[in-house]
Image (cartoon, rainbow, N blue to C red):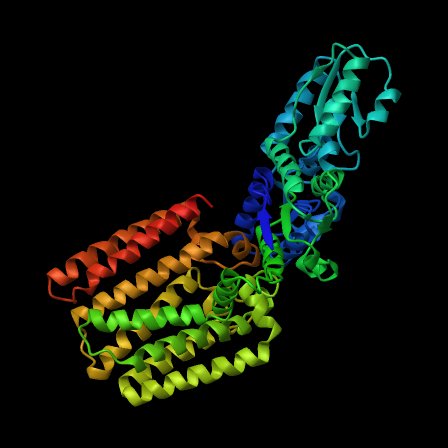
Length: 547
């Protein structure tokens, strides 16, 4: 099975801007009451998550009561009419304007031409909030054209200005414009359809011609998503309009060899990714070697065997760097510890991960009891191996194991802003890197002595920085979901651009340490070989920039 995702699928610029603004407010709002004038975006799952962050949608200004105090209201990407904005100001509310710049441009066109005594024809859905906001700028001279038939009911007009809802169908708009020009030859026409919408619709047409079936992902109340589904159906391609991955259970996926996926402008990445993961799980590849290898690799990643293998390899590297005798049991200890901590913490934090998470969390939740038993046996075995190695390794491993298990557990009352270790800003990335570095670089040295050596310091620093960079880079890709559920990773805390600058600086620090350590006699010449890891990190930076 081939799965192809449209490049334009997901949040458009205006929606992403609005969501980012709201999440920034949610992160620092404290006890302040914050409302959005209508649902922020047409995606119920995202709106529900924002409610949990204290961002509540309202239908009218009257829904805000006196008891709400000095509240803040966010104008969503669709914008509001001047009349509604005046009511908000009269209410004495603090306004955060998240109107899409493309929508604001259309508002300006309407405002200008209505002052010049033009009748304004707005092509769009009459019940859509964006169209209602645009109509408010027409100074009573606006008409909504929802269908080409509506043109026949228009009166004789002298000066006519035509604009479109920014997410309007390109083909429909062209047909309507032609009809308007027939009736009003001197009409001034503006192409106000967002370029993102045009690209999205063009891409759906291309996918429909290439694929056996098309899956359009988005909220049922999203007009632009409905248009994508209709456009795909018009091409004669089997089309499925789905809102969440759960709806795939009723779809005959096995019938199709090639599946194309697109999504509306208000569909978040985490929903799209979960649907892709579900579709990927249906790949057959029974008679193809690459299919078998792919399934094996996915299984290793889903079950964290891949992470455990990485920890074991790092342990071997750390022992060789420190010029210690290689002990396979230390590598096994590191692998078992990392596997157990990653697995157990997924279940301790499963309430949030079941809402937003990668395919790993989703797979884990299906077989919870089995994975918990395996992880418990893994950590027990790791502790036994550490005990055999000596008191120092055992005490260190026991300490970081307890801290690892406590990481996601609630330790303080709910009314405290920070009630668990995971609530400490940036703690996920730092704590993960520290734990890996301890079990990989420090445990082997502690078997010999508790002396702080230069070799151990280099191995610790190398492991810490590699794991930190890997963790933060992964979180850059998940920044949207982490922000929605309130997880303050390094990228959420300081932003994507600053995180990229930080990680690049750290990669150069590792390079400098690896080059200097053998020359100073601190480590073996293996440090030179490990420089290849830095090149790999730089490749990842390049790919991350290119999405």
